Image 1 (cartoon, one colour):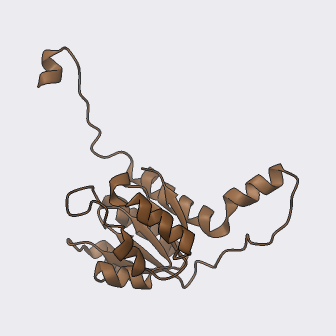
Image 2 (cartoon, one colour; image 1 turned 135 degrees about the vertical axis):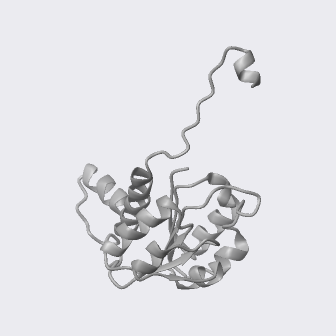
Length: 175
């Protein structure tokens, strides 16, 4: 209202393409898993060494989807296309995840089981810094963390600590 009184227009985009956001999440996970960013840098420098670039097969691994709204559902569909198992957490469960063969479980169970964790939750007081030291301590060692939601979901200091200790193998952020 104040902006309108000043002659300013305020626009809200409530649903930026959920497909684009979900695809970005999966792209970040694949890039980090196969270390494509490192491979690209090496090739640009004339280094064709393959060591350290193999990553893991996604087939048979578990992706943890935290937040199964529109974006989380689409990301889950794409990840299961790689043959990944699906572990999910959302206080509002839906049939799409179940139809994909996914299992809803507690957030702590997702942390312990997932090889890749993909965040698709809104930033609210209850989700702020949900990825903190306590959460990271419960994660499977070597997990890949992807956040395409909001930066405030992650405690930066805890993330840096988790990366330096190797609990988190890699982290992709687009927030």
